[in-house]
Amino acid sequence: MRLKPDAQPMHVSCTLDSRADGEEISMQGACRANVVFSRRIGADLQAQGARYTGSYVGSIRGPATLSGSRNGGTLDLRIRWPARNDTGRTARMQVASLGSGRMRLVTSESHPRSGERIVTARIEFSRK
Image 1 (cartoon, helix red, strand yellow):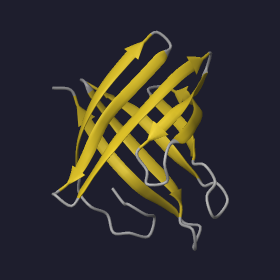
Image 2 (cartoon, rainbow, N blue to C red):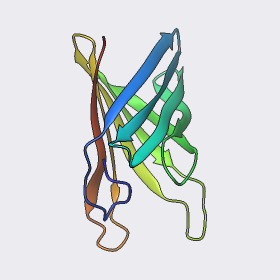
Image 3 (cartoon, one colour):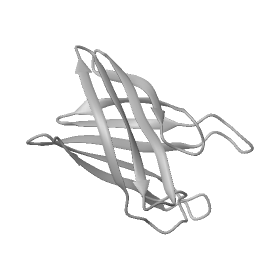
Image 4 (tube, rainbow, N blue to C red):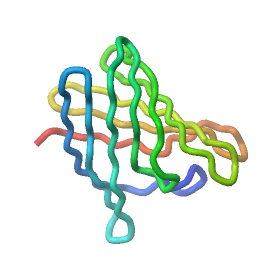
């Protein structure tokens, strides 16, 4: 996980509770990096036909809106944070089912100066 697009990646340990009920998906948890960093993460999504909308918590930028669609076993979502000093920033989140009670969450965004696509988080979860 990177705290900012130009920061060095750090290893994190995360716990996550997830629930799927009909057309709603909820994921709530926390990630930790040693004793230096702890952050709550979560997403609430509602399906409307083939489209998904909802909210995401986990960034220092604050809550964000999510929108996107499912492609096979992967939700492909756009993250949009509220505008602050600059214009609102967007990123991409992919939540993929890996089978056997496992899933992967990947977020990426454009580097603010170079425009290069940077993976800001890649976290794999397994059901206990």
